[in-house]
Length: 84
Image (spheres, rainbow, N blue to C red):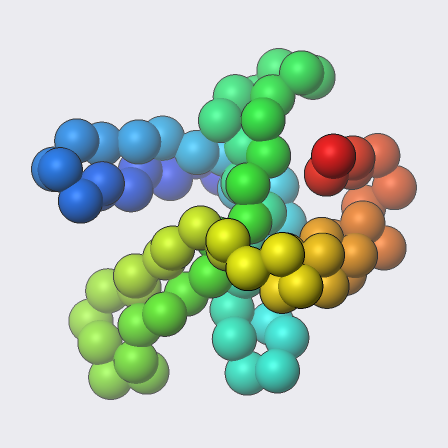
């Protein structure tokens, strides 16, 4: 499992473990966990950067409809994921 570090808006660093990634309707999404343990919290991040940006910029998916749709995609990709 790949571990990545994100820089928060306040400048602090947050580490996540990438569980899966997908592309839906031209947008890249990551399914990440805050730990590599079985009881980790999972989050869905969306890449909002432009194709010409040198670095990707990810934000948490907060829209309920978008979250449910992408969570369903990840659930079909992975048998053991529970998003609620």
